[in-house]
Length: 545
Image (cartoon, rainbow, N blue to C red; front, side):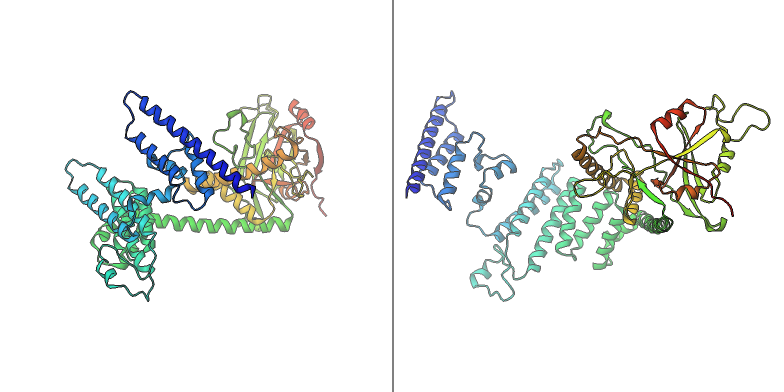
């Protein structure tokens, strides 16, 4: 029994504090040079009513909470809210929004605001001074009409109106089905799209027209306005679809036929391009499936690296890192000639001279030494000069080069759930066909092959992947600076074939691109390379029977 008495005492103390605060505010208003203004009087009266009457609260706790909020310096009464956020923060948005229409039904308010919107549109068309404020007012009125229409509850098919309801139906409508209400809401959204058209807000025209046809797919005006919005946004295929939908309702509509004639060329071109993209995507999907199936059968490992360098746009330039396995856009493929063997894109890297060469098609049955002899021939004529302008010491000759490939995905570092941890600078093994497909499509999208929208989607997905990698690594090791040791290497005998290299147990091909390092044996960089990268194996040519 002590608790209610304590609550009453606390409430009395709070009310006394409110009275004292009100008296202080009234004194400050009276002492001002201009005296109390209308705002001060309204605020004082509102607080007095809250203190003396305390009506409208569902519970004493709710009333007490409101009284406390009045003493908060940041509290703004709903009467003085200047925007939606301030009205929401007052906690009385719903109640205050209904005050100026107190006693009116949602149907009556809906008709009132829709009428105001129509009048504003008419005034805007008659306006000689070209004042766009009429159309802005129309947008606001239609938004209000939509707001009230959403509050209307259909009566039901078996509803029988009274004579009074029938008499007042023109000013206070009732709806027996959801379809009737949807038709009205479709009209409101279509009219709102028209107001936005007058303001050239084409994005809003599209949004409102889409809402209109969602409510009523037979709204012909909404289909036309949607087509116009797509035209101005240069979404040609969507414009053509909207025109076709409208002509299904009225095949002889003059406005839609004129728009169809005007946009016909762009629409056909956009549809053809989409068909070409879909066909190319289907072909790529088929190729990736074939590559994955072949690699799985032949035990060829595939890997990937992150395709983005940072997680956020505002990362410092110094914190960026850049992978050294670029994606060529090429996939290994089965050759039509040479017995149907497979060919791979190959990158020859020359770290001693900071140079590289890209070979688009390197057959698996080709001997590496033969390709090297074509690129770096021996000087049989007694000359000492090689063909490469950057080879100042004439060291790049086939017999003078050591061949290596880096070994990836050999770490045993795992998280608490047993998943393998991969540092963002390292190569991650592709675990299944879906991962390979997503990686390849993301790499193409980031190059811009699928347009800017798909590039943004791919960038977001890659940033998310990179974020998870960084988070997992940092959780285990404390920092991204705790990098793993340099990856070991495997030396390749020049007489070995590319196929033998690919099937080596240590080989993982990053980004579908076989990367091989070539270094002159006597160059100082060779010794430094082996000092940094431990050589753990040798790929030798298979002995002929």
